[in-house]
Image (tube, rainbow, N blue to C red; front, side):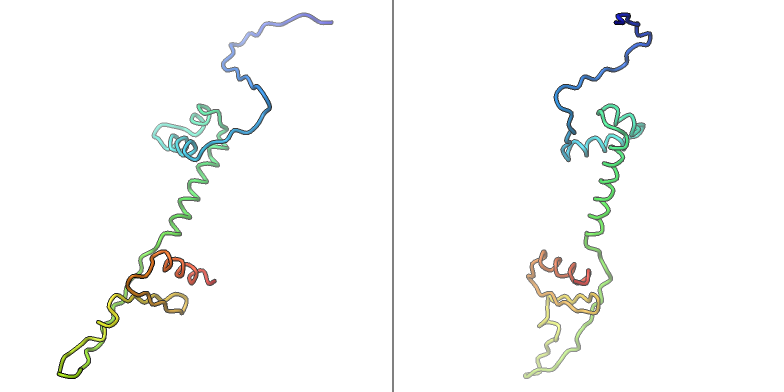
Amino acid sequence: MDTEHSAITEPVRRIEVFTGAGRRRSWSAEDKARIVAETLQEGETVCAVARRHGLSPQQLFGWRRQVRQSAASAESAAPRFVPAVVETAPATKVRRRKRIERGDQFSGLIEVEISGMTVRIGRGADAKTVAAILRALQSGT
């Protein structure tokens, strides 16, 4: 039996002690956002931030990619402004020589054309419902 021990000649920089069964850590969305925000500060590197929080740089790069993708999908889901075409209806004569513009009976009406279909949206329409209808038409379903 060999009982001879050798001394460690290099200084120990860091020691980690794992207790219990090994399992993955879970990070809340707020923690992830805070850590990703640290990488965006001037003078910080992903490796340094990852080291401080006990992460691998690859994991932190993955979180950054998720933030970019979710920002891009939120941006594409946001409503876009398009040029509006305003058409005025010609005035028509009515009894007693009173003039009424045809546009008055359609006051507050908006027409939207998507994929060859026209949607007429009246005053007081629910914004969420209108947005859902327009998204459905735009996607072709």
